[in-house]
Image (cartoon, rainbow, N blue to C red; front, side):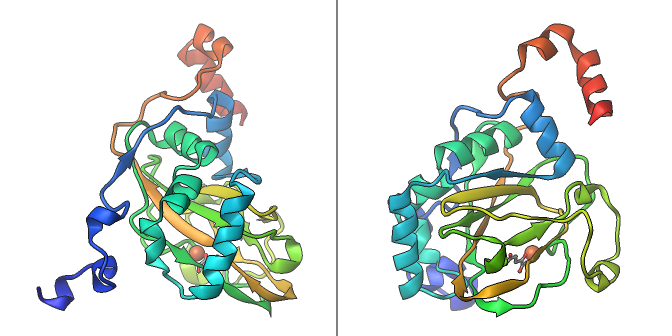
Length: 246
Ligand SMILES: O=C(O)CCC(=O)C(=O)O
Ligand SMILES: [Fe+2]
């Protein structure tokens, strides 16, 4: 086969069938109405310490041996796919937001950063579009404790609603409303793809590792998560009222 037609995993000798490429996944949704509204309003959600310690330790050993930006071998490892991509809390939140049979990540990268380092510029990732639909999620996993000194990613809550030019954002320094995603080892945070974010300033020594990957919707959006009985009872009017209140 012509090597230029090979995908990145095929180029390192791994067939797609041994990876999560093209795979869908389903599980029980874990978020309720308020949590889904809160995600839509803020554009992100942090699940603290949801990955097992054993998986986090294995990841830290793994990154020592594979410090590269795209360690695609992980897509073939059951301990990683089950512990991280299909992590019950994280996948339950993804299931709540993207509906059933969502697509698993097809690739991943490690935003491994030497510390200390200055902050990155504020940005939305390439290909962000303005849309009220939630078809795609950007997800981050910290295998190690990531306090403020290790430069966790910072996000601006609600910024997925802002229409801004990339070069204007990149000139901003501190944004008053920004929030660092400071988190213990094993934390996963889920964001709307177009949220403003950046790597924060770090002041410690060593490396901070942060895995990033995406999930896709395959079904049409509907209210298919854990329902909150009072909202179900009141019907669509209460949903509209709640949305106005947030
Ligand atoms: O490393 C981080 O905290 C975020 C990195 C990032 O957003 C990027 O490189 O696009
Ligand atoms: Fe980014």
